[in-house]
Amino acid sequence: MIRPLLEVADIVRAQGDRFIEKHCRWIHWAHRKVLRAIAHCRTAALGGHRDQCPRCGYRAISFNSCRDRHCPKCQSGARDKWIAARQNELLAVAYVHVVFTLPHHLCQLALQNKKVIYDLLFRASAETLLEVAADPQHLGAHIGFLSVLHTWGQNLLAHPHVHCLIPAGGLSPDHSRWIHPRYSFFLPVHVLGRVFRGKFVAALKRQFQMGQLTLAGSLRPLQNEKAFRAFLRPLFRQDWVVYAKPPFGGPHHVLGYLARYTHRVAITNHRLVAFHNNQVTFRWKDYAHGNKKRKMTLSADEFLRRFLLHVLPRGFVRIRSFGFMANRSRATLLPRCQRLLLDNPRPQSSAAVSTSFAAQPVCFRCPKCATPMLLVQKLSAWSISQLTLARPVLDSS
Image 1: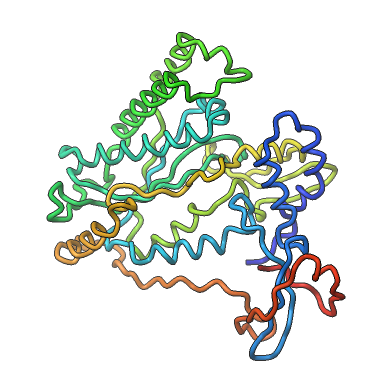
Image 2 (image 1 turned 45 degrees about the horizontal axis):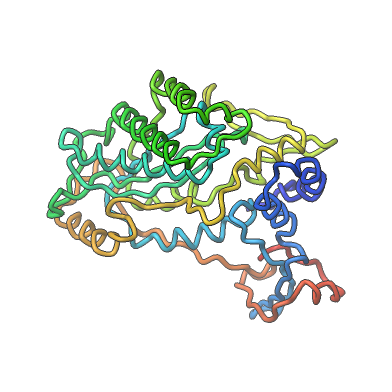
């Protein structure tokens, strides 16, 4: 991929210190850590390593990546390794993509209680899928799926939602056979929406009663139980958005499809257009108006504020698995699913199912002959500062 001319790191280096000084009353140590990591990523400050081509002898120094999960430059390697590890978990069926979204009414509450609200979003959406799928009126099966949390919209404002990738079908209650879906839409979204709403609001009430919610600033009045119940009441006057895309083929599509969602950050460097006079311009899709492509210009201060809205709590797991793909069940139930599908395959109507995808190893190749480079020496930040480089430094890790 061609390196973008403008990066989030450029904006952080130019305005990061001023932003921290201006917003020191609310900015958290985790925000500072993310800004520092992005600013130093693939610079001499993090050290590096000397690489050599075993074929033509070309040598170069590469700077280390920060490996922060919020950094736009550090996701491709982690994503490729994660996806390669998922190859043996694929099933020979079509897959379905379902998205659960929290109403905008809850966004401010979510920002003050990220760990609690995002965890409830995972649990309520997973319980909804498992319960509705187990109902004989819909599928009558025990399903498995991956869930990935995204907290942003295209305009960088808070928009918490979970992407669920589900093999179309599931195990019978006694795990003796594979049940294929009876309908092309897999599970009815109107039912999913109602069940999801009920489960989430009930769990949110429990968290409030247990004193687990932070209610500060504009939400301080909600510390009163009567006011909190009044705050929740409008949630039942609207349908909660659950979106299900049509099945999109078998395992030959799944890994590439996963790559779009698993290790994304709030904005990629390739969406940035310009940074002039303390103004940042970036591309975004206006989903409310037919996915129309637009450009948005924000002050650097507002851009960084929106970017930091999506810093996750320390240790928070944003990719989770449920059902027969859950960690405690995967080792026994996934092989059973694969065996049952061999015995009872679904007739293929469109694209044939294939598992021929092979993840390409992530490596730095020689710019002259394309041979994988070999690491010959690790370099500290101090040793790099002492070097007089005879050739351009390759900024990769």
